[in-house]
Length: 393
Figure 1 (spheres, rainbow, N blue to C red):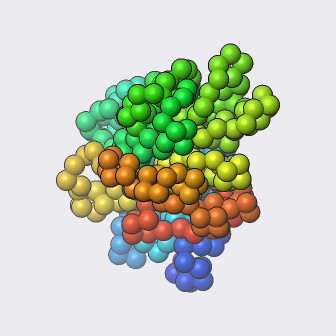
Figure 2: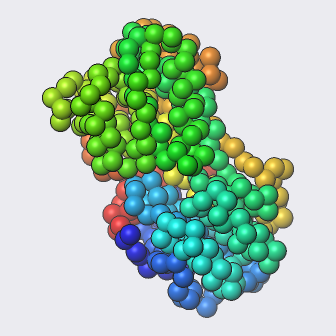
Figure 3: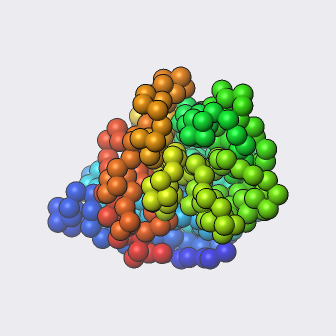
């Protein structure tokens, strides 16, 4: 796995903050690599254990622990958190350090154990296992460290969790894929990483929409593991022996389309995450598709949750749920009223995408937008995120 070591103090002088455009500008980056983090190299005024005093205000020291860095979602997740912490005055009294580990329980546990001795007030954790980190998280909480897991959550009751409820959005997407093929035909379904709660939730949400159409048959399922190349390989293997009228994808619609073209076949309606390349390919190939926002800014939401708790504003529930929007491409190819009908059926929120607003040929293929729900009180600009990612990855 690619390993990175980037540590920076994210306390900005007021003059720097005022010189930045709204949520824009450049910032440094922070990341530790490997299973055991290096010693903190934050500046002397960046805070220490328990929240240091800085000009009469507390400074919180926060570590983001990430277990995997080999896809665009994780890279952007880190980038948006760093960028928001470095450019929004709201975060002027925190120090954020990011630590990336190998994608194993042993590596992430070892990293967190070391971080417990480095004076952090809070851990933000994208976990490599739903249960493998429970013991080390429990020990951290016992030491007074606020722990917030997000995206891939831990199951211990001692931490706070941030998750997305995929049922509504993926139910809508599943139904629209069936509508796009006239309510009958053969479909393949991506299972993501089936061992994770996210992989199962996306699949099962879409299945609720597909099951509304008795003449649509699920003839193949595969684990695409949210990986571009693997998705293409798995779909290509299915196409060697099976006709498909549509494919439900959890992550990479573009690679599904590529698999059809490589096989000499016309691409079919499909779905995925909000990767820019997904929406561009669906749009340019004149296909009905759905791309569900999985919000790389979950890291920002986790950071805000930790800050709230450290400041004494404890959430009512330890399990915090957000409902993502479905981005619908080429709704104009469906019968009028179809999208709204199924959105009401599943209680889903949706956006009819527009080029230049929700996706753009000028954006990087792996870029994911939006990174936060439109209603979130703090926002970033797409180009600022793109520029920052280009500087650190």
